[in-house]
Amino acid sequence: MTLRAIAPILALVALTTLSACGFRPLYATAGDDYQTAANMAQVKVALINDRVGQLTRNALLETLTPRGQSSNPLYDLSVTLTESTSEQGFTKDNEATIADYQIIATYTVTRRSDTKVLRNGTVRARTSYNIVDSDFASIEAEDAARKDAARNLAQQLANQVAIGLRSQ
Image (cartoon, rainbow, N blue to C red; front, side, top):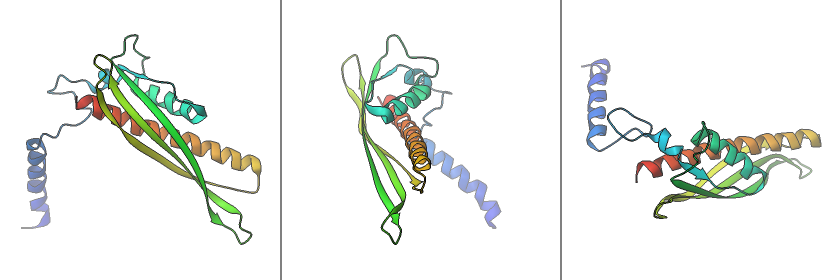
């Protein structure tokens, strides 16, 4: 037998194994009464400090509640951010040419009815940017890195919220 003949058999075995272990796609709606998007829209995102917190919260709101926040949310999401920048790639004159920017978020998803913590943990987003001779260009690169990291972090947080709501 060749590999082409065995591949469909392996795929079939893999699919039946996944269904036997209780695997459910996170955003699936068929065959299940659970609606991930509808439940995610019931999450109230608390205010997050600083500019990067605003960027992260706005990206989270776009992901979790694209049609607007619920007037009676069922869940709360609280997030605390920590930012850090480290310089890398030094020249002979000991001047940095690259910087790593990292955001670490500690989050908690809580059900409002009984204050049960559904999920908590830490997620990280990291990006790099070039430090150049022009101060304006370096500031713009840092700002772009901050926005990219905030969007990435918001997506990770949205996934963690979906997992927490799905597993309740």
